Amino acid sequence: MSDQRGKIVHLFTVDSDNGETLLDFGLLYKNPGCRSLWALWNSMSTTNEYFVEHIDIEIFPSQRGTWRKVNTSSLPDPISDTMSALELKESVFNMDSHPFDIVSRSVQIACKGTRCEYKHGDWAALMSHVDAYLRSPEFDSVYTQRGSRTLKSSSSDSQSDAEHRFFMSLARTCDQLEVASRGPLGLFLLDMTGAVLTGVIQQ
Image 1 (cartoon, rainbow, N blue to C red):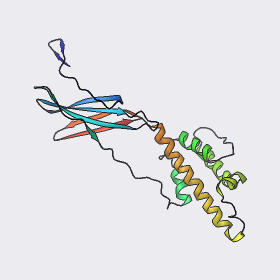
Image 2 (spheres, rainbow, N blue to C red; image 1 turned 120 degrees about the vertical axis):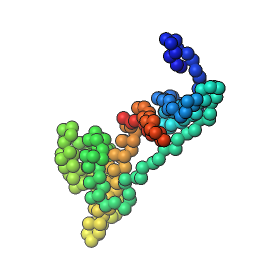
Image 3 (cartoon, rainbow, N blue to C red; image 1 turned 90 degrees about the vertical axis):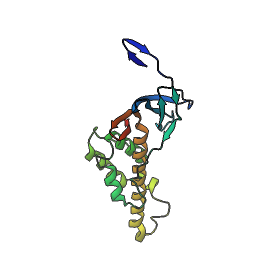
């Protein structure tokens, strides 16, 4: 629509048959007779997936282009099987990596069979709880493989392997919970000379 001399004039209608929920849209200037329409869609999945499409629109004469889907770039997985238990632990309890609520919930999931008692935001108490869990019989029953502690000479390796499995599980759970908690809020469009910058604002 366009406001011309106090009147709202309909300029064009754009249809999309993808069946998804429209979250946000915006127009970018291409040339005097053409605009680029960008749309953010929610895929309605449980993992808060979304996608972005754009279409060129000729104003006069009124013509529509074809919706083009924007391929999203995936960040490298920060968690690797080659990381040591200590590296995984430092990654999990790095306050810049995950919010306290995410790590706290992940600890509750990973520390099966124990009760977590600490104040919200108390990272030291949360880490102390994990350290105590690593020395508990509950930890042995969940993360130590059967028969791996029958030989005293292998008890140290067995403990190291069990701790690695624990922190790997904890780190993966943190990542999964954080991805599930995110969601797209809107489009970010910046029309610059010779270039267009687009992005998605997430919560």
